[in-house]
Length: 196
Figure 1 (spheres, rainbow, N blue to C red):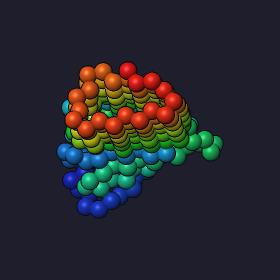
Figure 2 (figure 1 turned 30 degrees about the horizontal axis):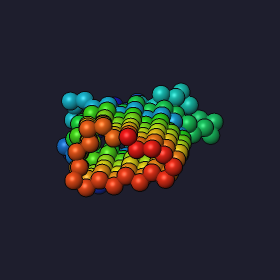
Figure 3 (figure 1 turned 135 degrees about the vertical axis):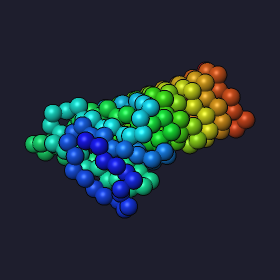
Figure 4 (figure 1 turned 90 degrees about the horizontal axis):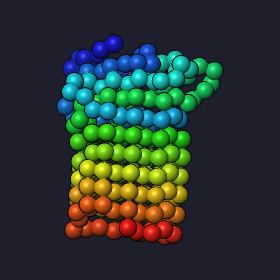
């Protein structure tokens, strides 16, 4: 189902099937919050955002559409709230993803990337501008990013590869690996772990 964003003057919440495509303008932010399941974000060349819930228990997606953002919430059958999501966005789409128990993979986004999970790994290739990755219990891997990078994990390892810009890394109980990191402003603060 396609929804023309140009016709939307104010935020509108639409109840959509578990596989929905929304036409967007360049720079429209995408948010998927409180997801209990894995999230995978791909880029594509279309001026649209597609969200597909991969769990048959998802009845519908509530999608709030405005001129500046597409925000997704889900409704599941039998009071279940876990589902995996596959998302396609234009490369220049800022993304904001969170979930209490989610492994998150973002591949190819060339804008801001914010990911927060309590129990799950985060794997991001890309990101330009502000990149913030936080996991309480999970490993974080970031590659090919530039801008202001903040990475924080309590129980997990951090690996940064081919990263440019201001870099802040905090890890309480995990190792930090830096490979081809170019920064004039770098702050790496492990409490109980090694830096390589």
